Image 1 (tube, rainbow, N blue to C red):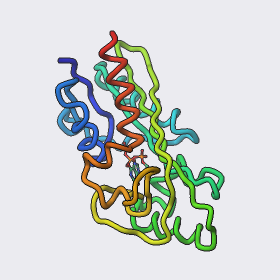
Image 2: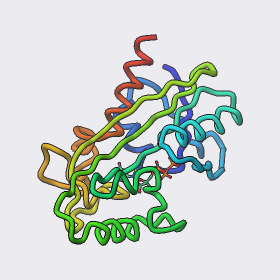
Image 3: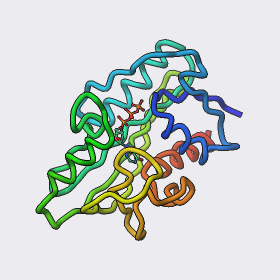
Length: 192
Ligand code: ITT
C-alpha cells in the first residue's frame, strides 16, 4: 500500500481523513515522521497555503506528501473568514473566539448561507496535484453540539438538520468538504 506523509498539525483532520482512507493508503503524521515544525500559512488563498505546507514537508523529507487548507466562506461576509478561518479572532487560533466573532459579525443578518472549502495539495514523485471539496450549508444563530472542531458547532450542511458538532465522524463524513476532497485524491491514486 502507498504511504503518504500528511503535512498537518491538526489531529482532528488526521482522524477524519484516516477514517475514509483506511485500506486505500497509509498516512504518516508529522509527529510519526519525527517532524516538529509550525508550517507557515502566509498566503491569501487556500490553494497557495496548501501548496506551501506540502512543499515545505516535501523539501524536508523528499517523500510523497499531501496537505490541506480549509476555510469557511460566508456569503454575507464576502467569503470571510475564508483563508483566515484559523486566525479570524487573532493569532491565538482559539476556536471559541472565532465562533463568537463570526456570530457577532452575522448578528443582524438573516442570509446565512456558507460553505466549507478544502483544498488538498498532493506532491507525488515531485509533481503537485490539487483536489477541492466543497460543503454548502448555513450558519446558525447559536452553537449546538460538542463533537468535531473549529466552526462545527455553528454549521449545518445542506440536507441535514444537525450541526457537524452534533454528528459522529462518520455522519460528518457523509457531507464533508474534507471527505469530498479526499475522495478525489483516492480516485486519482487508484487510477495511476
Ligand atoms: P494545519 O496544520 O493543517 O494547517 P490548521 O488547524 O491550521 O491545521 P487550517 O488552516 O486548514 O488548519 O484551518 C482553518 C481553520 O478552519 C481551522 O483552524 C478550523 O478552525 C477551521 N476548520 C477547518 N476544517 C474544519 C471543519 O471540518 N470543521 C470546522 N472547522 C474547520
